[in-house]
Structures are given as structure tokens and as C-alpha cells.
Amino acid sequence: MKKIILSLTFCVLAIVAFAQDHTAIEGQAFGEGVKKGSVITTAEVDTKLGKATKADMKVTGEVVAVCKKKGCFMTLKMPNNETMFVNFKDYGFFMPKDLPAGTKVVIDGFAERKTTSVEDLKHYAEDAKKSPEEIAKITEPKKEIVFEAKGVVILK
View 1 (cartoon, one colour):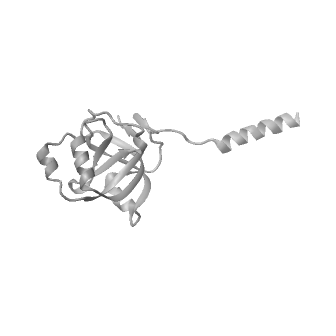
View 2 (view 1 turned 120 degrees about the horizontal axis):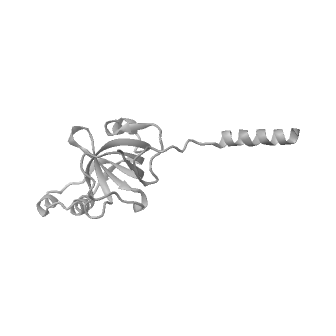
């Protein structure tokens, strides 16, 4: 009898000790989705990065645009009329191409300070279906915060 009680006690303790909170943020999930936790706004990304080049974080923000070609990237609204470029880890998932501007999302992954080349900027502009005139105006690389998302949730 003592062995049974001891075994049951051990099992209960093991279950409690190894239990993890897998609750996810509710909404339409892409990639790995986003687990609940410390979420910051796009306005706080620069501060959280501090002097680091790259940092893991969860960010909530408002969609400005999604790649019109296949949904392979999106931009989120930042302070001062800037945008944050968001791509998806290993092109493992895409966003709906018709996702309206102003949609609220939460993204989970890595923010990184980068300089995007003119060639890449023109490529992204083509994918976003920009006019040839707008594409021709791209003549200098852009220093920006780029986010590689491993999961995205469109909030309801």
C-alpha cells in the first residue's frame, strides 16, 4: 500500500513539475503562433534592442501592408511614420495577401538592426506591386529594424 501511495505521489509531483503553460494568444495563428508572455508595442522595440544588434521579443502592432505577390512579408507601423519590415522564418509560412491595413497582430521572433541594400529594397517594392516610378526612386540603402517572425497571430 505504501508503494502505491508513494508511486502516485511521485507521479503527481512529476506532472506538476514538468507542466508548462502552453496557452497561446487567441486569434488566427501562423507559423508557431505566439504563446502568452511579455509583449511590447512597436514603439518599444528600439528601446528594448538598446545597444544590441539582435534580440528575441514578442511585439504587437498594426499592419501597414502585406506583400501582394505571395504574402511573404509585411510591414508594421512604427512611431514617426516609419515601418518595421517583418519576414517569416525560413519562409515557413505566409500571411494572407488581402490582410487589410490597420489589422492588429502579435509577432514572436527576433528584431534586428540591419542595413537593407538597394537591390533588396527594389525587390520588396516589386513584390508589393509598387509602380516603376516608385521603384526608380529607391537609390540608397535603408537602415532599419527588421523582424524575423517564427509565429504571428492576427488578433480578433
